Length: 307
Picture 1: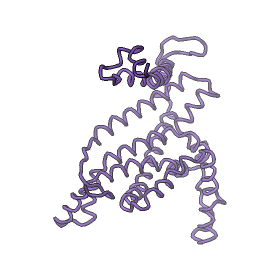
Picture 2: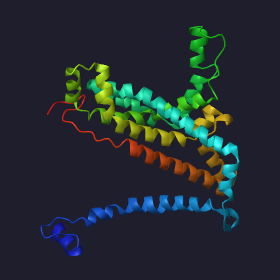
Picture 3: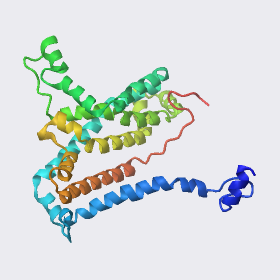
Picture 4: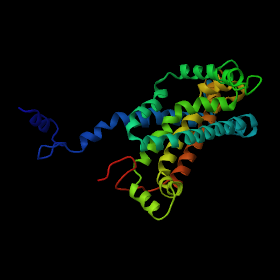
């Protein structure tokens, strides 16, 4: 008996008359992933959400209360931390965009170097986060590379600059590993731009800069929005960089959530911070999806061959 006959005999509901397998089997392949998303992740998120509305789950007191949310609204410290986290995330997103867009454009135009540049761009992701962060400490501290160049080599300043334990140090430490998340979507967007539209704009008298702003940039809005979303979400939840590069004065929301679930043993308030942070991320997705729904079509892409 052949394998096909065995399958037909054992699973008659999924085997068609022509011998092909119906869509039930591919649907069954989704079960592990759906279980992980719905039960494991969804269950943990729902538990955290419920914990934010009870008195003290660790003590077995599950009385419903809004006191933890009132605490967040009445204590400026936590609101300030939330604002600082958003500011750092926005700075990181803007920094990756300013650095990433020109680099992505260069990668698309110069296709010969694209693979090498893409490898160099993605390399920070493969580096251990602790090693990468300590490398930035060696670069930014008072005796580091930057101050050595400014003070000893170029004599631009008389004394070392305070670069460590600042908000900008955190931003720099986050831009480095998150740059690929901005570049890759922009590269995908640039490669879908129709070259004929750019040439048509130039034939109508537009300069290269005008053609870029009028034709290329609008068609890469979706890539920019996708990259900005990735970078904002990942940077706003950063944990290690704020601790090592920012110090105690530049902690972010993830640090306080970890503190509440760890040494603080205050799972209720930690859940409140996590819920508010999650709602902030959802709001970001809603805003981005409403303002970045751009349809891009073309026959010949930048850096591609004509069909």
